[in-house]
Image 1 (cartoon, one colour):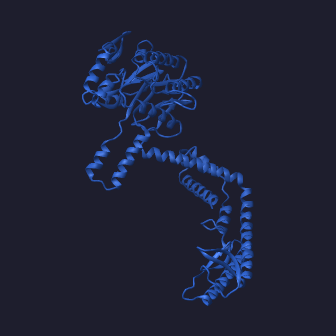
Image 2 (cartoon, one colour; image 1 turned 120 degrees about the vertical axis):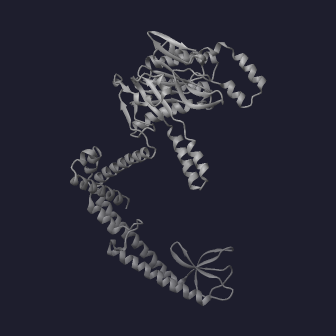
Length: 501
């Protein structure tokens, strides 16, 4: 029935497309290449008809499938009726006020279950005896009927197997076509799932391109005109390696919608649902110049740096998979051959790897496998060891990725030294996660061209660390390390860099 269902659905799909093409011949070209896939399916309608003639909807073989099966099933019903009447007669003859007798079925044979220690007037074969459940007896008068019933059931099984064998032989002749139809239906189902997902989340159709096409330009005039805060940092026309405005992490957006739907379903009062709807995930903007090979993202803990990495990585894979990217408008994104990520704690007790060693091994593998067409995502690069050595190692790693590594590397870090790479190498760009220093809360928005502070001391103060500890930490931190954090915006002006402090 599963085979018949696939063939039948494919047949009606093909029939509907043929009707649409007959009405308007241009429909064939509109649906390409799906129309070609659908029209090329070879469907044996007679096979579907035969299957539905002999197999019921629940998958059982119909009585009408063969005369032998019909006779065998009729014989089974007749014998079961005779056995039922015989058992009723025996039980009625034995019934007393204190007696307990009931019909049982043991391995397909009709028997009687008598109470513990109870004697019966009829002769029979004792099949089992238990002090808790009584005795199972097959009356001698029922033995011939039970034997016939077993033979009749065997005849039913053979007749059913003959019918299924007949269907199998018919299907074998069309096996190649059936497999091709099945593969095509699966492919269409996956495409439909992608479209349904993309429409449900109102994603934007991505514009994929090969890295060799970076010479083209992409205008952001419309978008920037609506976002004045970005106007100061970006020219109206610029060539982008990655252009992804207001992009969402798909799982965060899905969780938000599920929470809203759950609140509505549970009948929560209107203000609560309204507040939940307004607590929307914050989208992130990604505008990466085609000259950039390494983007360093800094900012506070819990500020959204890791979510940004995952958002870009998922967007790249969704675009390659034929899904819309959850962005406010069309996305310009390279066709990355691979996406490599070192995110999370890679320590392993079984392999004697510390957190630092685990990250280092992972990054080493990425470095050897990535190509000039790859996307590399590194979370907290250089962390887990001495800060000075970690910063030096992080700088060296990112420079190697910029020189001969991936097409694009995005790394998060707390090392201030990594923020300075932009000012000595055009392949680097800085960004940071915005932080509301008045309310001591992250906004989860990206500021471009800005090296951010970690704000760990301020956050610690808000979380209740004693004031004396916080004050001492500020003194130890010193003014020297704050210099790079004070850099706000950097613009190329007539061959020079204008740095606003």
